[in-house]
Image (cartoon, one colour):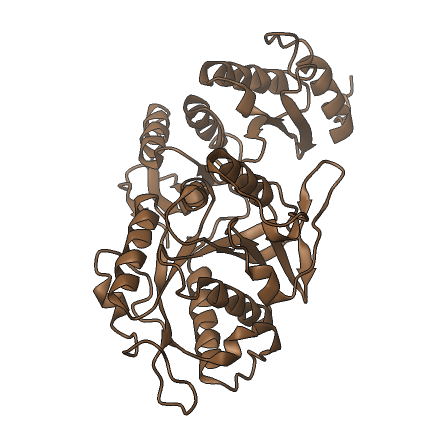
Length: 439
């Protein structure tokens, strides 16, 4: 009697979906309750994509086990995986999609030129070939649209998401572009709501970097963004004055308290020897980073930005070939920011890494262990959140029961994106195992 022909991926998927309807959850089954986002089948591996945001930890672990059992019960399935919806979304209260990196520009002191630096930097990064966006978080005095020559009003998608205005290639969102009836007296919770709606729900079009122009002080808008937005880094802007230093230091301490790396301190409107560019402030600003000594910075010294009238109209400047001292300094700052961004994404993630971010902790451990019996080779890479050392211990203990051993593990810190844990397993179980940071 001849063996039955192997099933196609589509046939396996239909059989899996039919069986999933037998899984009981409060209110019905995972499909009717919209807990199951997708079912995919490839190379005899079935992958369930689950909305864990609607489940508590206990129910999440139960559904994970049940779905894996359903998958493995279907003829033609060799392995079953469970992934979380939006597993890649950073663990923040304000997910921002369509943007690779977010950089905040801030200082608690007003009048230090944050908006001018933000807009000029945006133009310089755009000139360097990056896709750039600007979010004007100053709801009380939104000046960025004027400096960018951005014109509203902001339109909305059918689902209600704000569509950024395009200003010479740079995407812009600002309350100035939606408040058609003039100034609005935003207060407390209103500030929180407008900032989170405009930034988090905006439909950004695949931007390399989004610059967030923070308002002065450490009020509602600033604390909301620093606490909740997935900021990759921040720039501190200060004039070379005692008041500027003290205020900037307060903002830097706030960044550090919430784990936002400070790229460096931008000394702005400093004195210069150039004729006609007399600064109202004394000093060249090169000591500012040292004076703000309670804040750890990634770049020890950023080029000071001299007082330069040309920066009043950044849209008119060619940052590829800067012709004034201020434009040259901003071009140098753009190079420093690009260098920071190139090293801020952490270690390289293997293409075949299994993404377990967003799963309950126990489900992560169990699924990671099963990968060693499926992949077939001697290496497995896991993307996760939680304690990576605990995962290493669980996997090592499980393999030991099967008289196997890990010869190497590498743990890479991806920042807000979690961890990548790489395991290597060899036939020679006598080789001692090691754990080391990923490169």
